[in-house]
Length: 601
Image (cartoon, rainbow, N blue to C red):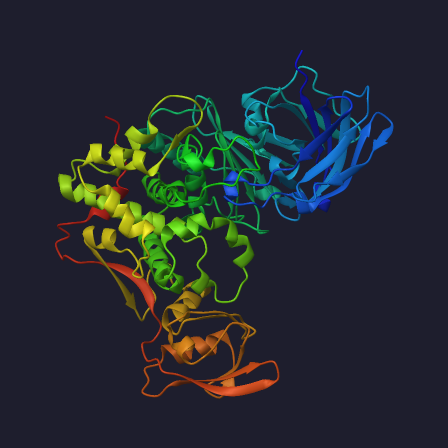
């Protein structure tokens, strides 16, 4: 009989940022065993495993404590000497997390609590999970697709436990759990194969309107028409609604976990829908692009092998493209919201001065560096996760090129149906050569050179080829347009204008290399204390930049004990990005064509 690992996670004190974990391992008597926590996490594309947050760790064999030592060459590994005659040991520890938790709900991502034998193939290593939550809470997870064990414990002591059937460690890690006091489940499709689970922070938000369920059902329909056969039995959309760390998501094979603002599913608030709903469509598209089909460098046999990020512009970029396109096709996002977001993202990419020295491909290859530079000075000069929106522009470029060459007879949808619409194992790896080969079947073109110049080579200019080919121009205007009357849009307009990001306290967070502020020798960590002789405020700076002027913008700046005057030679006003049509008759409008929903044949 093959013995399996047992893992039990007690979430009853998750609200205190403590996950209590017990793991039982079959072991070889009289041997040195090595156990590890995950290191490289596919969904984050980097080595940001949970080892730093593992605390209170103890190993034991029955009542006998077993000493452990950390591997001096790999901090995520623990070495334990197994005594003779011992074939089972236990580990207990706490995992400390401050995000994904609130007073009345928690999202359990298994990489935060996994401990397993090192050097084993996670696709073959078997494990059985048990989860304990407060009695008043509900639970939702794609582990239901595998099934619950018959010996599920009954509620006791204000909590209850759920035991699921055994599975591989890889499968468990790919199946997050959403639990909460106000958790409610809704069928998205009549066949019960697509489920929305909501866990809001407040009870008044624990309902999904018929309209939002209808739009989610349309998303399911449209993805099927684009990507073809589904490779899952049931799909779970696990969403918490919160104002604590909202706006993030993680992709999985037959589920995703994400968070939106409390009003993120309010169909009467389209502005909130435009800003938030693409988390849903993006993570859902990942079930095909990133999980079913993923780069060959993203299919290691364990969580210790580094991931190859060269194709992140496909993994995330193509997902970003279809995530937004399908959001519009399904009614989650408005067309106006799509155009406004596309313009703002093009402007943001134009402001990433690091594009002068660093390629799109390299932002993916160096993906694991992002966590180290997230709060660094000169972020735009360094570049971060630009492969998301750079990838979107690349795939818009591809889509419009196919449509232009075929008179709209073919499109990127034809590529997607062929590339993703195949049956097979749960994971089908691909290379750039596979993408080029499949695209060439849609329309003959030198796709290798196409991607070389746009992705592999350094490209100082933002790629607006797809926007132009679609019949539009990317421009800046001095007055705000659609959805640009927000404080964040005004902050972006300042960045697009004089090249600074500044807080209400006047502290400069970033300076754009090559911009007016850079020319005036401003730098992050300096503080603007006066604007034109008046006390600094973001409003005062905004008004000063917006003025029609013939003289420089005057600022008083401080750093440490020094204060000095600075002049910015800039007279272009606030710059709000937008797309405008090139042709009065709209004879060419590929973007509107792209956003039209696909009709069943």
